[in-house]
Image (cartoon, rainbow, N blue to C red):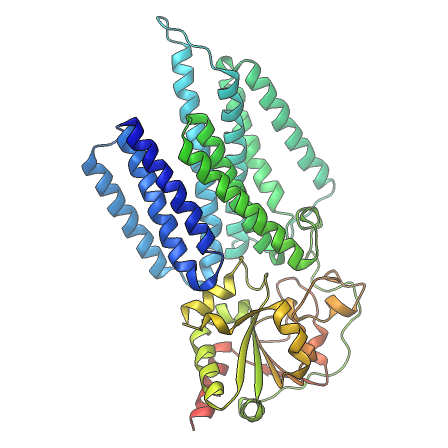
Length: 465
């Protein structure tokens, strides 16, 4: 039975690697997700059978209930709520690892106190156990705070106070010191482990509250990495190879993605975590100058109807308005009008990694129409119209021109270089980063105010007349 289980673990690990590899490309991402899910199911089934945790009937019931819950959430969770959902899933992973750590400690603790067969807790076990609880606790509470910021249950702006970094450093130091004390005498340190669990939960909160909402894509990918690391540590605690491999894959991929996101903003991870970016509602740089030039749906239609090339830049406002199907219909009509249409995707557009890709895939926008920032910017000057739908910070030219701007140096989509720019927004309010955008005042920019879905449907109606 042990050999059979190990073979199932090996197959599951191969499925995980294959699935993650296929997630690297939009056209194979769905298949990769399905392959990885099959690998996880195989690993779970192998584990419960090997250790006889449950009867086969209960396993089937559990799989059915879990599948039903997952399918229901996939149906009812709106695309705008997907970042919050991902944050919670990261948190659940951290909580599961924390509980595994506590369960193993209880097992080791009861064995150590057995009067007939006393058993000491090995150093290896105690180290991995306390690390699992610490990382799992930080991941869980940090993810809950990320969810609350994204859900707007609490403010999305950084919550800062004097000496905050010193407080965080003190909490982290106390956690490390407490961990060292625990491993020296784990049997008699149950109270200390409870305190360490609370310290980890507090550290997760204090680590995420100073991070601004505009940095949430980075935070989510980092917390995803934490959940993988916690899972891998839990695998070492219970000596389960597939959990070690799975956690390591998630942890490594999360760190790689975090690095990619930081590069996309031209900022270090330390700057994201500790700078309090977005704490103020306006930029410290130069104020935008000029006048706004509003345009009606009818006038915007005339501009688009005459265009031979259009680049569409989607942002979080597109997700809020649930306008992905309308923008796809508009793109189809533009192509029928002999217009070349491209979608420019910024790595940090939206509120989670890949948010815009997922959103447009839901509307069946062809993958070959999605272009990365580096592919679009060189041709932007030859583009007739750049249609910005609900994006703000990722098209802000202050990042390129204003050395005093908080986002100076961040790579952006050069929407302002197009011959004409049409910006769809509900109002002149600043974006999630709270920074004024001089693009709105440029001579070649026209502001099309209103709900993105209604405005896009209005443009579609004009094309169909």
